[in-house]
Image (cartoon, rainbow, N blue to C red; front, top):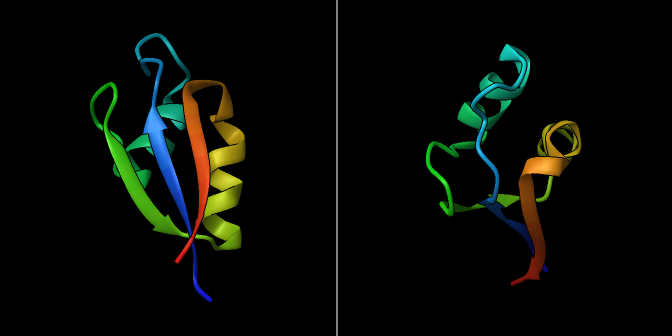
Length: 62
């Protein structure tokens, strides 16, 4: 059973450190309220953890 994370950008990256902006862009989050569905891997979880204060995350089992 494959697991996915549904990640939504809830707060802007404006005024945040450049590392946070790079992480958001690499996750594919470019605009507010944009939602992406990514595989539940350690690298994705690590990026989400770094900017968790800007995101809303749901776990989806497919």
